[in-house]
Length: 531
Figure (cartoon, rainbow, N blue to C red):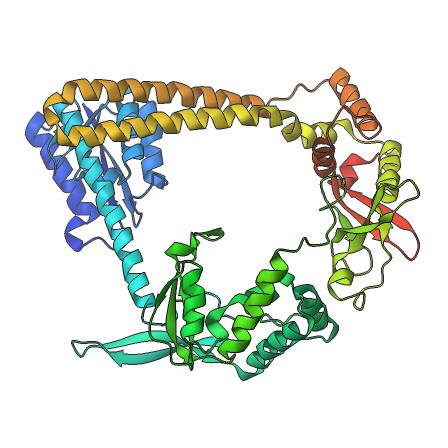
């Protein structure tokens, strides 16, 4: 008999759960049950978390399982294998399909019986619940610390740095927290931004003013974005908070904490879920901070009022929906991307659009003097240039591969949704099973059917993904695609988005030199594309 032993120890596991102890207990368990005529294969993952299956020895074990190198898999405790219900369920299903038994010593589980499988599913719920509870506890602790007005880490706002301070808790234990400490040179810039906004009442004009006057950003460069200026104006980290400021934030649905004293500022917490996704404002916390504000409440609230008023106005920006070269066209003089801006009406009353250097736009024409170019004129030039280029067929086919496979993306997403729906049903059945173990046989049977469906769907998914990578490489297809490329810009067969996708697959970037009226097209793998 061949038995695989899997052991895992995270960086924070206590000494008693060492790799050596786990392996020894697994060996003793098998020998006591079966005898000494056993071949052991040992897979140890030392220093890896159980939150997912991305562990080197675990993956090696799965490969060996599919190669039928062992008959039974044993571990000391269930959470050594996985703390995730979905991962655990998929593993058990895989082992069953391979006719491999699974044993967990601590919980005394054995997959040879329906009750054993049922109890394992129940135990996996508690393993995941433990992990989620720990994560929730950590999050709650972070929010409690936030209420104290301390700095919890991350990029400090313009005008501040993070500084540690020592304090004593209620049990007289020495602790350390971080607070924001002023950087006077940067705070001078913040005051200038608020003063300029009250003067111009326009974020764009403030941005241009900063660039024109070579004012440095937090990172020391001279290029400001409208977003960074807006964030500074919106941030209550600068205001000397009073009741009016607290009421303003509360009316936005933000949870406000602390007693304002018209001196200390405000820190906001729990705004984002992950890196980019913002939470609902009713989940945000605004707390009186440890640091002193620099903008009086009257000025700060006046700025907010102006921004809210301006927000209702439609911004005068160009439309990129019908522009082929957005994301590809670069200013030859300064290297910044070119953006779409509005132009006048032509003689027939048609709205014109232009490409303009983004730095030139931001700086009010002071930092770059490259001339603007009409969108229809430069796009026509690019089209004609592409028509005249002789392109290597092999490289083109390789570059357009992903474009031809776009049609399959919808089917892939639909299958993933079905798999998730079935996995949710499994999770619900497992929870039901934990409440009524007496019906384990029927519930486990239903779970196994769902797992089988998921397996078939995943196989179908793999085939579709593999098909996406397959591409018929022959002379006839090459000529057809090359001919289509030549036609794509002079007919309406493809949508504008499809045309842009094709361009992005073969063009690296395009430069516009307004002084000399020159357009340069740089293709991806240019040396290979051009004969």
